[in-house]
Image 1 (spheres, helix red, strand yellow):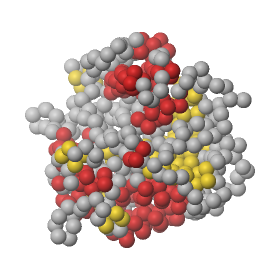
Image 2 (cartoon, one colour):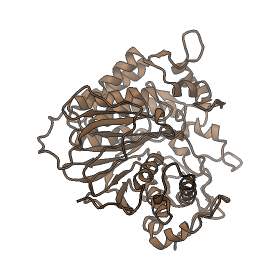
Image 3 (cartoon, helix red, strand yellow):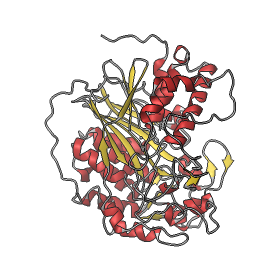
Length: 532
């Protein structure tokens, strides 16, 4: 029997937090769909929530063919790299949570980009020892790490896929070869506009030759929303991925083209073949924590998902659950708790392979309660980070980027993917090969390796690469029967209005019926898994 929560509106808080959270060299074998007994938590509907209708339809096409959530995630990402290249792409990285309805367990996949072996602590410092300008650093060859999103999706497909890998790129290959209608968001960014704001802004990446080649009409003018845009190079790249498997980007000839482009002036990088050959995505257990009657699971560091758990813990110390989404005080509490969370996140979240991350200390009830007491009656100056015992960091000077997307897939078996994917800044580094942009993930660090003798929480070095990510794929669970999942956060412009998201659902047993894209379903809720 379902235990009713003590508060009135827990679900809208969980949904808002999740929406703001933001995550061998042989080709994958072609496998027959495994025989599975009916999952104990099978979904009433199958569906996709993503930032673009082309991506939604690509995922639905795979689900209609009997594919799993893992299969559909590959199709969604391949299409997003075509129609939303400002936010994510096959040249970037991602975090993915996979809920297996058969076992009621969650698996965390880490496809974060990797720094080259030649990276150094001073790679983003100029000759005078001062940090490089943001434009110079982002568009440099030094900003790109080994892309991990496709190897990560390959690992998820190997474990949970049902359709052949080669089948998952059909829709995106067609759209790239035949053309697609330029979306409003892509058209706005290419023309130096912040979508929906009327604000003009110069994005340095779109002025580079690679972007100009992709986004210029035959008459020399820039593409506009509504134009038909073809990307034959991307279609060829996807065909190679489909034929050779998820590590095709890590092997010649594509890897050699990426390396060569990053070695071009100005400020060439140090990526090499061994960096690509040794890359492996990580798979492990999620980090889970309580919120009211829910258990929320997030990827472990270097994802900053633990910060989402801290945010929810801080909010639980307030009366926000007794308020609704129309209450201004609820949003004030959410904003102030978020400021406290981000202060700690910027100070302490890093890559545990190189730096100890105080996961337990940041979630310790006494520490969380002390942080919650800092929420006053009105907004004040930016809060300082807390001081968990035994941890000292230098100031973080990371410049936050906005090239990120999030999507959710639910299949007919009840399996769920929650994936946050990114090329870091808008259009990544602005350098492209094979019709896709290369990430600038290495500039997601403090350019200064230390401050006043203390190591920064986020700095780039081969010996101590403290990789922190703003990406936080999330899955909330409750002791109820399965319900629907929703999620969409296209870049920094998160899903503030339903019209900016595209969500479609396939009722079980049919192949054509869909819910209206403007109607987002209810928050994600599944039974508590064993992987707490």
